[in-house]
Image (tube, rainbow, N blue to C red):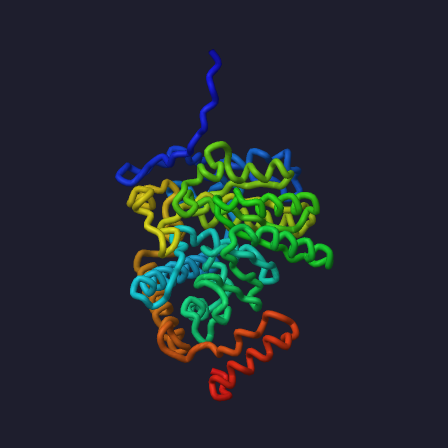
Length: 415
């Protein structure tokens, strides 16, 4: 008698109360994966979508062909950016819990994904982030105070009260607005990259989304356009194991790697240790150079781990073991870079402690600065008349009349 097909329901390897289980994460030895030339054909490097590019070994030494050979100064800058990102993250989470801001999304455990990419890309390259890429802003030189003002929706909010907290943007830093509609940044990045190529420029676009968003149509539309038109784009999938409260299997991660999805479109694809700063830097540099030379886009899967909750509205203890991050086999990105620098003889525990104190002091000072521009309960507040701006190029008559009505209600003052 023929057996009837049965519906497969993905189940995470560990639930609350279980021991964390990461046996499904395939990890290649550091230095083992070859580094092809940037003009290599996609079919000749298909194995890079299954294996894992790693530079830092278990003794924290940099090994293998992907070693970017950064100098000591660059490593110091990288570690500082990552330390400030984590200090900012911790402060904002604490402020949300105390009622200082309404909402926040942490990037703890994923700092290397953003900071390494920002340092590998050029200032003229356009970035299309997701909501866990705070490090892109900080590594490009933005003050934490400006990000804090956006979370406070105060008088210096870059979004002028029109976005959720953490949905930053920065035109001057070539960082596109974060969108709560997941995956939209991928086709936007590909479109920008196509325009860059049409103009004859060598700037590339880079975008980030989580592995859960690879199930969205925009992800596939973007890959189709990128492949067909060979758009100069670096498309990053941040596989942090969890999409809100569902593990990566619900997005198809049980079958093949997320990097392998690029192969079907004819897109060069890499799978990278997302907690290895040197590996992320090297992979991003390789992909950007490939795009700049006209060899098309690259899809990079960063294998990392979301250390905290999806957002401050989420309780991860309801769907995963409490101590998962401590058991994550690829470790903590800050600790790994720190230990590498110690192993090289250029860092110490004392210097690292001083760096952490400096980062905390900077973030504390930035919070006090941000509060001078208003809080959620105390002014100065945004000018209400700005509600009518940046909607139409020329304000239509009915909105102009409403603006005048608002002003008359406020006694003729813009308040």
